[in-house]
Image (cartoon, rainbow, N blue to C red; front, side, top):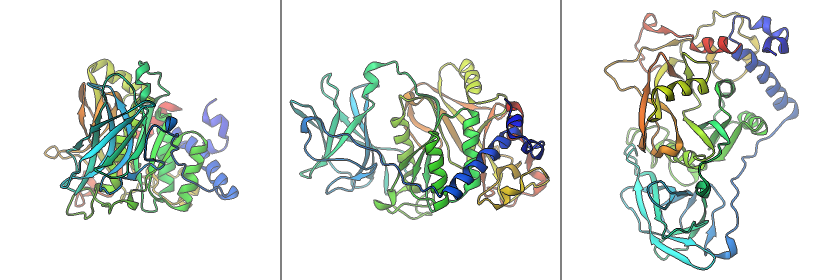
Length: 430
């Protein structure tokens, strides 16, 4: 059944708006009724840790997503078995770049513990901040598969992590999802309700089966919205209390933006998201909540990726060029836009159909769709270490729509480009 048949009179209201947002509006009304009338609350679901087998590991079993090691500056997030090119447990962490410590890994088996000196690999994209995303590499001896690893600084009590991704021993994997979206991080009492809902519904219609969000802080209303999508089994929220451990920056580059760590630990969250879901999803999208990767030729991501893979058989990293849609300029000529939306807090992306022309002499940032099993480490805009090839997707195939303040602040309106790519996607879905 088409959306018009299901929604009735709403279709007349939206006849000139693409069908994507007809469905979105219906869902949003249901969402608001659920939130406002039922007064749902949001409690961030903790990641639960299993108990150590037979007490084989000495130390505290990590129960939170971020743990600072005892008597150490280093924070650890999670440990993942990595059999690509060797046998290691790769612990995603955050370490001080100038004062690196000697850390020790102990693999906890029921009959014995093997201890090795860890290798700390600070990611090259640290944006000059004192702390950076770091891979803590623990080499595994022999062919045994450790289920737990403890890590500690010299003579300090150890912290125990459950080793994830041990299902690699049963490759090839059966994917739970074809497309999963990683978003990091929601912070600063984020309350852009309307754009968040619009983005979530666009993700779903384009092919996302799960959205993973690293959550530091948001408004009380946003927490209710998150709870709604969690209950719909569309959203996974991972607590990200990075501000309890480090003085994070609200900007991207040091020292212009003061702090100890780049932008709420964004790259650490993205790397953790890739490893956490490496064997759960065929593809992973890495972008921010104010961005949408939108196909220009195809109906959705599955159709687009099928096309891109057939024409680029060796590529595992697909880059989509950023295009800024200034939020300071609105087009309200569409009289069919629901008046109810005006009372909802947040940005209405329907009203933003003008984009800035990209400058050919500048490097424009990108966001990615990746085969996560080919990624060793990633930054925000590009993968840092990977296998296979990468491919820059042409603008006539797809583009990254970024709804933000103007990048070219002095650009006259007549030089902006009208871009109705969202409407085109919606019309193909009707």
